[in-house]
Length: 275
Image 1 (cartoon, rainbow, N blue to C red):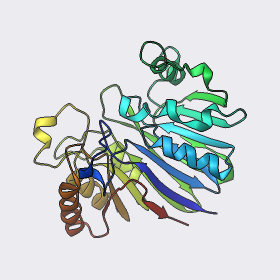
Image 2: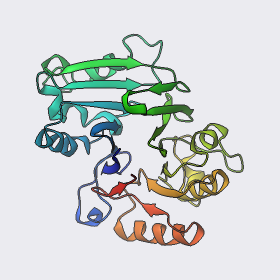
Image 3: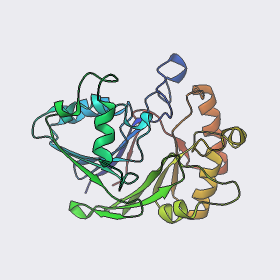
């Protein structure tokens, strides 16, 4: 069974295409986990546009999109996901923070594509789209033995963390979560326990964090602390702040590898082959 992780967008808050962000990238959140040829897409930030083009080139006929939440930087690439406009392309769209809300995930995606904010409505997407709202904390099962465990995260309006298990490999995607200093998040620790890879919200540094309390994000140092406590094999820093240019990110990565060897900062286009 093949298991590959590819980063199509690693930036948080807003895309930042500039010469100061060439190494680590400027697209917003989108990570692909390909298991046995099927793509599980985590978030639909601007990075999903390029992923969509690649899926069409490869002849893929289906994918599963799992959203952490629906703040703009995680969904504003969705209207540009070309496979969704292709008849018979099967796209299952899932979210864990809107259960019980009128219309669920479908309504949110449709609303962002309505006039006057966007000229092309959701109904123009001719693919075979399905919409599933679950409750963060549920365990989801898929074909080929893929199991996805979920957990509620601390973020304004709610968010969901994911752990994708297949072929004895576990990759966790934990972004847009705010920690409480000195109190490790038990939901996160349970989700990431012993994981092979954890992709973690490293928007801020510990020094920056006090001025950002309530904004719903964490720090790379908290990611290191959680990874050590949970016995994580590899930590990937993710959701980089737009103000953190390549020079800043290189220093973050250097400091992180001192505290936890093997830690890496995610880059647009980076791939991890797991099995």
